[in-house]
Image (cartoon, rainbow, N blue to C red; front, side, top):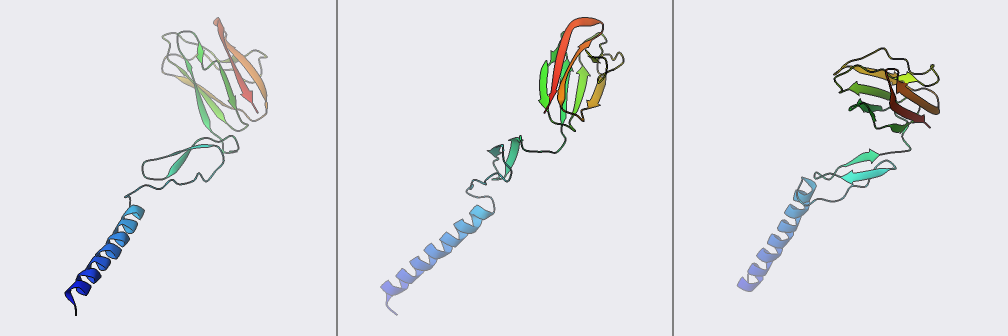
Length: 145
């Protein structure tokens, strides 16, 4: 066999073998390929090529939301959720607070102190305004859509 032909075949084999290596390597975590989001909503491509939903307004899965009681305020003061979602209020103030509906019906926590929580699952749509009975300037709203 001709030496030039043999060298040419070796080069072709190396190139094909190398191409297969890089192709296989990219499937095993080498070069990243974007992965389209599986659900509607905003998504983010993670370093390993997977994606995660950041917000999905079409989702009907119940979620847990947190409102922090800090510096005599509800943070966030307004929160929009869907039916079935749960809101957990976490008191980070050094004094006790309540979560009490302005209408007196939906939210009726007892006093809870620093590090304690109150939670409520909202099952019906509507706007639920609330306050702390001891600190009337503390006001919040949950909108259930």
